[in-house]
Length: 423
Image (tube, rainbow, N blue to C red; front, side, top):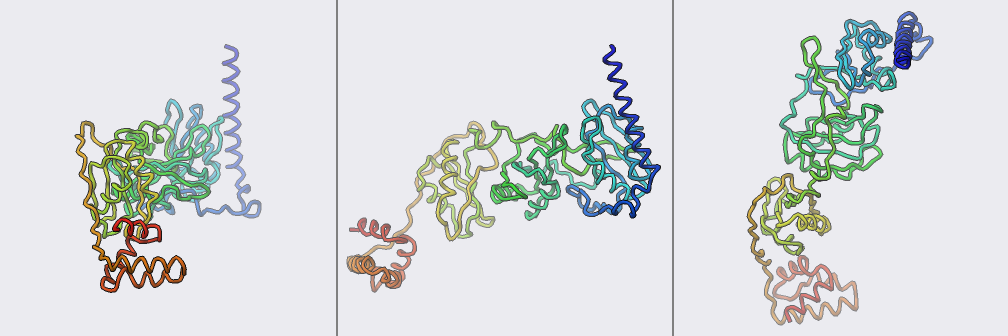
């Protein structure tokens, strides 16, 4: 009983000290006088991912999150009054941590609050402060396609993450998840896209890219993972804060849900395809890998990607690994990753027949003899290889032989094997 009384006394003393400190700031405006302290730099202010149409230059309201449950509305107002006169202050109490909204008479005071109070520890808990705005100003992303972005540097903000992915036209939102206890980034976040293909392309192209001081990793967000927007009511209007999301709702991909660990995923996404690539071309390429049974091949030539579905998860995993190591297909390096959706349970196995082999021009005895002579000369004199390319396999089949050299005889070893085959 005595311990509880002492603890309560200590908390009251802390509150009184904070109120006194806040009042001192109000009573001594000279602390912020240009002659005593350099004028604060109001721009750039931490702004997170600003929604379309949101103009911080006219905003006078700030959101305060991750507030210790012992903080009262009176104490909150006194703390924020240290940066300027307050029009209104509202605290919304929650079991784990509270949040609130502070409306200033001028933007400068609000900006100063963001710069000086964000991250400040109140009862040992770092407070989160940023601009507040109506939820109607942010696009509804509930039906958008979300990807997970991991290995983020501690200094990466919502704005930096959004800027990195804004090269994709349908990128609609980006949030970095943060730890309520430490007030620091948890090292991962989520990015939303209006278009599923843009999301898939972002995964393929951004995975392994550098943002700040680290290489990021990208994948599909697990179902149910959210940005964890703090949607609250303030004076009858729905308000959210504009920074790093919430650690309570945002979830990293679990090992079980990740495509690389889910046996239901058997489809390989193949990106960066040349417009010339046909379904048959893609089938031939992956059939030649010999990693398993191919059950479906699809190509969307106008969009530059395709899909190859295998019989098992392990076969698809090996195909991704080997596919990314393949040489150029029609002058482009293909990029392989997991497809966005798992194969539905109960899908019947229906292996595709082997693809038709590529047509090979017939070679006459004279063609072979001519090529043998040129090959022997090329081995003795490397510079003669230029004439081998120019001359082809024979006098009468210059066009066809040149095509054979470029397409099948890319080195001497391959050419020799092809020659032995026809002999």
